[in-house]
Length: 374
Ligand code: KG4
Ligand code: ZN
Image 1 (tube, rainbow, N blue to C red):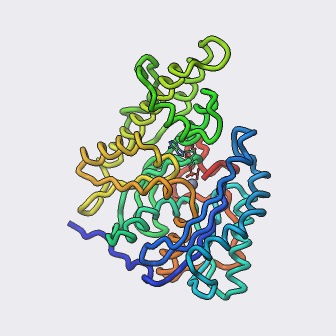
Image 2 (tube, helix red, strand yellow):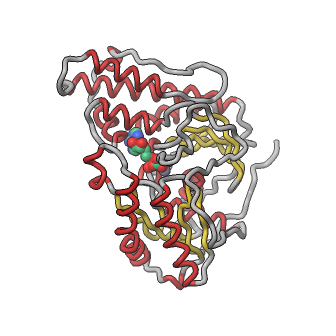
Image 3 (cartoon, rainbow, N blue to C red):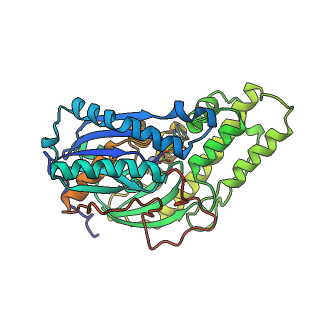
C-alpha cells in the first residue's frame, strides 16, 4: 500500500501573524510552527450587522478598518511577540467581501514591507482546510496528506480531497445554497435573527417531535457527492406560511429547527459516506470537517458515525477554530512558508478563489459568488 505523504511541517520556532477580515470577524493571531496558538483575537461584528439580519459589506469594511489595528496590537501583546520575532505576515486574500479583504491584505503588506518580512496571501478556504493540521501539530500528532475534507461554511459546502498544501481536488459541491446559508435563511424564517446557525442549533435542542415536519432531503442516495439545500429551506418556508400569522409558537419553532437540522444531518452524512467509498486515503483514512457549520454538535456526531462506519477517523477542530479566526490563517502561512512560498506585494485580493481551479463551477452555486461569505 502506498505510504501517506510526509511533507515536512513548519519549523517549530517559526512565528507568523495571521489576519482575517474576509467577512464579519476582524481577527488577528500569532501561531508558532509547533502548532502552539500564542494568541487568537476575534472581534465579531455581530452588533454592527444585527439590525440588518445579515452582513452588510460596506459596514463590514469600515468596521475592519476601525478595529484591525487594535486587534493586531492585542494579538501581538497577548502572544508576547514583537514584530521582530515574526517569520512572516499572513492575511486572507480571498475569497470573501472585497472591502474587508483589501483592509486585511493592505495592512499585512504594509507591515511586511516595513519589517522586511515575507507576505503571504492566504486562501480563506485553504485556511479552513489546513486547520486540522494545526490542531494535530498542537497535540504532537501529525495529520498526513491525503485526507477527505468536508468544508461547511457560510458560503461553501464542498467535499475535497486534500492532497497537500495548495493541492485540492473537489469531489462534490452544492448546486444551490451553501449549508451555512441554509442555516441562516432558516433562522430568518423562524424569526431567530443573525447569526443563524448557532440560534437554530440552540432551538433544535428543545425539539420534542421534529418528525411531525417531514422535510425533503435533496439528492439523498444519488450517485456522486454534490449537495442541494435550497428545496429544504423552501419547504421550511412553506410550512411557516401555513401557520397562523404572528410569531411562531416556541415548541413549533423548536420542532421545525430540529427537523431542519436532522435533514441537513442526513444530507451531509449521505454525501460524505459516498465520497468516503471511493476515497484513497493511502492507509488510515481521515475525514476532516471544517468551516463554521462544523461547530454544530449534532452534525459532528452524525459525521463521527459516518466515519466510523467507513473505518475512517473523524477529525473535527474545536468549535472556536471552525468558525472564522486568524489562527487558521497564520497556520496556513506557516505551512506555505515551510514550502518556501510567499506572495509579492503586488498581490491583488481575490473575491473569488476556488480551492480546485480545475473544478467546473456548480450550476447555480453560491460558491465564489462575489459578496458571498467564504
Ligand atoms: O466559516 P464561517 O465562520 O464563515 C464563513 O467563512 O462563511 O461560517 C459561518 C457560517 C454561518 O452560516 C453560521 O450560521 C454557521 O457557519 N454556523 C453554524 C454554527 N455556528 C456557525 N451553523 C450551524 N450550527 C452552528 N453551531
Ligand atoms: Zn470561513
